[in-house]
Length: 318
Image (cartoon, rainbow, N blue to C red; front, side, top):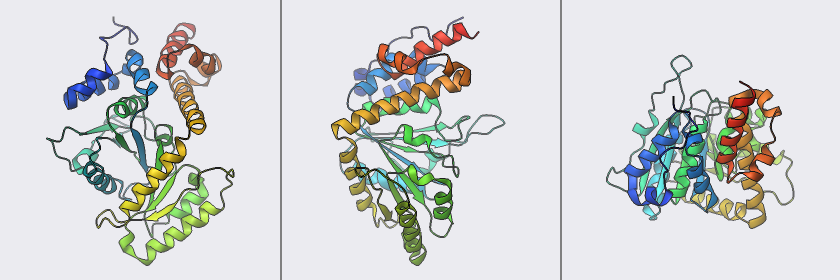
């Protein structure tokens, strides 16, 4: 029987870039299969080792308009001539573990456009919306495209997972839904880099939601040099406010890529991937039995560290 960590046929990131959509689809399929992130750890480490595309995470409760906003951003980004990958995560059934993957049908793209690739993925058993396969997929796609959009499940208060893969997190709130008050109570305001109130064409209700969110953010304790999330109202259907959103994304990108800040952010992100993978696979007992920092120091990257820790714990705890 083949072990899930046995060496696979090597995948090369340059060949994937040159091969277009078919090559990207094959590589993602390899990563998404059971044990795929372990088998292709070297490829994924190569993907995150070099500067890649900017990853924008969209989160928020169901029905807030994330897919409509994604469609609008796709048009704008492609209109600027940038290549784009989209990962749309759909909730999984707790009974069958399957997912309808309907987000892909809601995204309107040109099948002949080689510079955009849309992938629907199931959340599987992750309430926060991102399985380990999704983390691997984001790592791969950011190495291929200028920008990546990750549209998360967004299920109430379990919306933090997208922050572990996105360079900029946008939290979407709908006017008149009570979301802003709910987020104040839940502490979700610590997650986003930008907050958008969708459906700004609702007028007074949208303005009240903006004021509520700004009030919630004013209560947050932040370091003097910390980023302050802007609160924007927009309408994906009319296009109002979309330019301001992309301007805010670029401003946060410039802030986050300051060398010292970027290095610290990158190290924390990779450490989270390693510790989370170990905890999901082996529980707190497994996490207590290893030193993730030592593993990362000896490995070529976070995915190789996960691979080595998985091999070690599989032997130790069996």
